[in-house]
Length: 130
Image 1: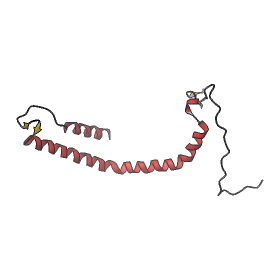
Image 2: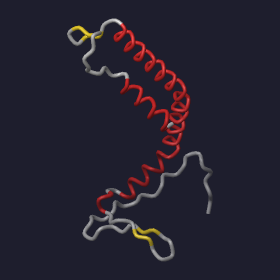
Image 3: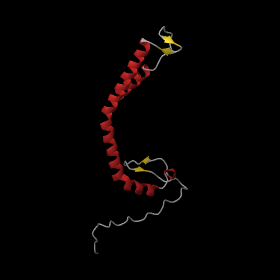
């Protein structure tokens, strides 16, 4: 993918008009073979980029669908996490403990985190009698 993108950029740059003295120009406008050559290069670049887009489009559509599905599934969990954390500025950098645990301490003097409310009961869940 990187090589294809590099090639596309290189071709696009090569298709830009160059300012050089040539017998085939009048008042800075290309005429004759020069104009025909430039239009052929521009057409070639256009065809190349359209082909590249048609190759990449299915993968982009697939990634877009996967991202939408991930957002739909992770949305509620991310909202709970956001409510739990409140503001990232209230935390210090993460620290790794010798046992491998990672701790993210709150900064001294940071306001207390918001009170956690119990999760709302699922209306479709069966009730348990104690």
